[in-house]
Amino acid sequence: MARSKFTVLLVSFLIGSGAAFGQVLNPADVPKEQERRPEEQAVEAGRLRSWELPPVEVVGEERPQLREEERIGKYKQPRWTARRRFGRTRVYVRPEGEYEFEVWFIPVISEDGKVEEIETQYEFEFGLPHRLQVDLYLVPLKTYTREGGTTVQTMGLAEQKFEIRWALADWGAIPGNPTLYFEYGMKGEEDKVEAKLLLADQTPIPGLHWGLNGVYEKVLGSEGQEFALTAGISQTIVDEKFSLGAEVEFKAETGEEETETELWIGPSLQIRPSPPSHFDLAALVDTGNAPRTKLIAIFGWEF
Image 1 (spheres, rainbow, N blue to C red):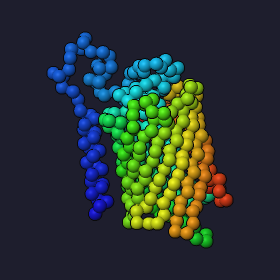
Image 2: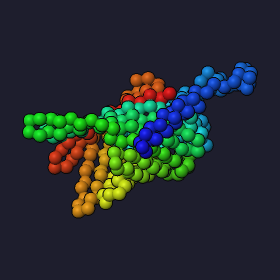
Image 3: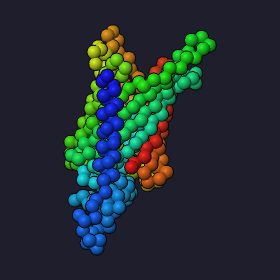
Image 4: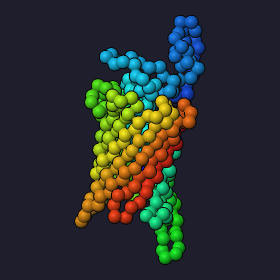
């Protein structure tokens, strides 16, 4: 019953948000054409997306060499932070009034080259006022169980998740631009909570960006809990078009009797084929005794 209510609330939220973001201004309430700046005229035709937002000046800072490092929006954040850059590391919040849909495809491949599972994730992201962001997720999961020479596939809705994050200050006001993250997920008969501290910034080297997350996760009603640390670094190769980087994820899961650890590391890239779209790919390898490969492919579209 709780899952049904969650789904109804999700659909209602999406419809309401779409209507709010798509609202058209009444021409009678808008100043004369010649009295408005070009970006204000663009708002009349439709709200500005992250790649259309005009840069804002920051006292004491020179204009950056790359367009993706220009500051935009009410929070004066770099333009590159308005999109997801890393598969396992979150960065800051979306600008107010910006929203996006993402599709994730995450296969895990065993040492012998066989697929163990394929996780698909559908995510809706909403940039809200006061440095807030809300995300909604649906997560189908397909698993492969091998018994002798037979492979059994199991497919189902593994999880429904709700996420909220809040940046403590405008970009640049606090070192590392700390952002608090909370997530509630419903997994079959088990619910879980997840808390993160998001840190991110850019370096004096043009196009060199980084992110770092501390993670705590717990399945409610169980003894186990999980601690994780994720990090990513990225270097822009072609401004707003192509960047290369690397990611690392360390996990320690404690149970009733023992603690299991995992360390994943590998390269990543981002391609932006068009202004509203981006494609991210990371290939992470488990460095443990039984090496596995996890591919993280994300396609996003900003509306």
